[in-house]
Image (cartoon, rainbow, N blue to C red; front, top):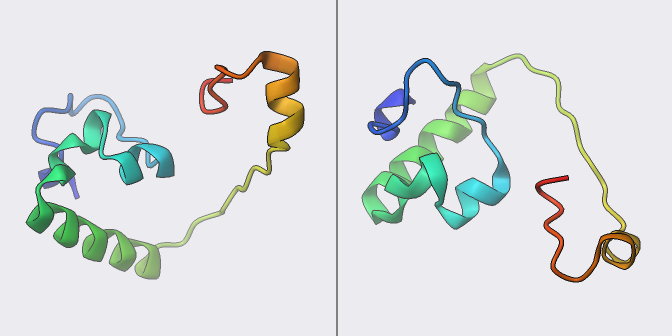
Length: 78
């Protein structure tokens, strides 16, 4: 999987945030190339199939969040 992140510091882990992957930003900017994105998607699905892991899910009440922090708040930063 590291072959997709050629500009990334190998000492820092690549964090698989859905938001960043979907928007192809940060470490995932190389995925703007269609062939790389398709290959990455296939490899990522394969990694999920063969790995043992615990999954954590966060549910956000967006109305309450934006009422408390304002309309320009980014829920991915808090």
